[in-house]
Amino acid sequence: MAWRVARSLLTLRDQFNAKFPGRNKASDGTIGDENHDATSDHSPWYGGIVTAIDITHDPASGVDIDRITDELQASKDARIKYVIANGLIMDTRPQFNPWQWVRYSGSNPHTSHFHLSVVASPLCDDPRQWDLPILGGASTPPPSRPPTKPRFPLPEGHYFGLITGPNESHGGAPESMGGIPNEQYYVRLIQQVLQRLGFAPNYPGWADGIYEQETKDSVAAWQRAHRPNQTTRWGEVWWDDWADLIRP
Image (cartoon, rainbow, N blue to C red; front, side, top):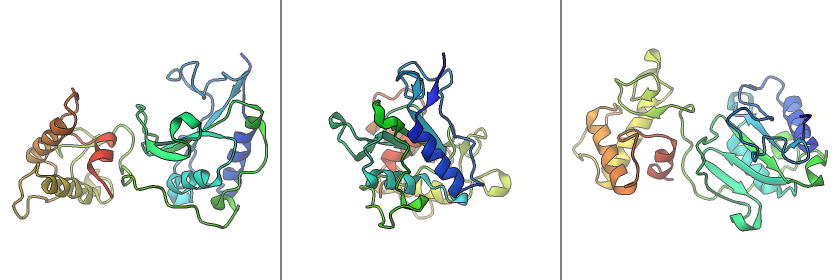
């Protein structure tokens, strides 16, 4: 089946490529793979047109999806259907709390890229430049995103768990041993929140930034209190746990 990408999305991609010529494109995408069904906006469902695009998060090159998605929200561009990033979704349709960020319940939190779907109408092929400050558009800064949660600092498929766990488990290891920058800080933050909520021992020095069995048990106790229907991942902090546990 012949397919093409909506022209408005090609315009946006061209703008990013021109503004940030060295940006990482590892998570860029338009047409979906086998994990996307026929109803996905990454499929050519609208008359052979793909109405979605993913742009890779690469803050080192200036492509920060937190800033970009806030600017998309502020733009109120009529071509936008919805935007997903960092475990949140902003849908413009009346039945979905339009133009407000809410928690995204899909399996992919979209932390390595942001997803933009455009409307299924002739507007999807409107080739006008996107008026975003990050791309040189309007200089008025966007409004702050409504209070949500700090960004989950791990790659997709990784979680905070025992320091003795597999490579995907981050438990406070230094960078020299494969940890991410500030890994102990994030583990200590989890521990301190668990102490404050009453799910962890509260003696001085317990929140040491190392994820061992007591931390795992404390996380599991919090999960059982807040997620009684959960069946797996006990004692591990994944992106969705982080979104509920770590608050502004």
